[in-house]
Amino acid sequence: MPSDGSTRHRITRMPGSGREVVSIGLRNSPLRDLYHSLLTARWAQFFGLVLFAYLGANLLFASGYLAIGDGIEEARPGNFSDAFFFSVQTMATIGYGKMAPRGLAANLLVTLEALIGLLGLALVTGLVFAKFARPTARVLFSRNAVVTTFDGVPSLLFRMANERGNQIAEAQAHLVLLRTERTPEGEEVRRVHDLRLRRSQSAFFAFTWLVVHPITPDSPLFGETSATMQEKDLDLVASMTGLDETLSQSVHARHAWSVDQILWGHRFADVIVRMPDGRRAIDYRKFHLVEPDGSARR
Image (tube, rainbow, N blue to C red):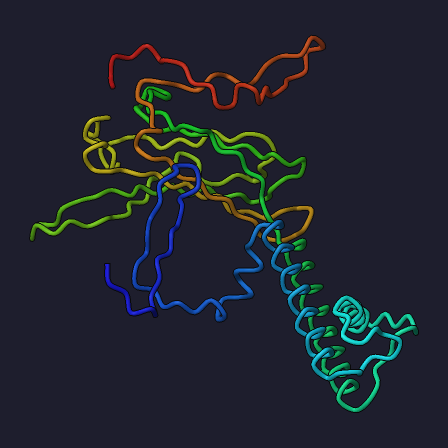
């Protein structure tokens, strides 16, 4: 595919389903979203980039000190390691007192490096704090969604669980259906349908939550079968939002299921068990387990 150098491909992976969507033709402007990229990068990538920038800056300034000539007192003339470690001490404002700048050019370079070191420390400190302080929710979604009879009504079900020991207050669940459809004009479009839930809100979300969408005549899934869903390239996307009582901040989580992850004629295994002393317990080892419901519908 031809490219003018100003566009790029971006791959977005839908969490849970493994499906990838490739965006083509976006402007390539990495510096414009540098803060967002660093904030969302994995810790290993973040510290790797910081280390690369730190070493690169010190190598650059060490080369500058060598280019000046005899600009560092007590340093061996032309020795790169002495210049490099002098740069490290200058950038970190350590100042052991053994090596010192000599002459106007060296002092100007030290001034510039000290300023860059202070700015870099402030930026990295802010980014590390922001990454630690980002409110996140550890919500576990079932690997599969199931279609079975629930309370006498054909229904689509999936599970959520709060993996943390806190409570998520005023939790809200939302489920949408993405389906390929054809308009009366013959145009193929990807449409989004909101699926009504039997219970979309919970005063507190502390353990597990079985989310149920009744497949009634007004449901976008009414009349669908496993085969027709395959033909329409169907996806389900669930989201959960709420208030983390520990942080007093809003948190959210999202998950998606492809059509291959929607099991017909199955139900979830019961996770509620009784302890020997009579207390109820939740066995999360059974959280993803499904079993046939005995129906013939597929």
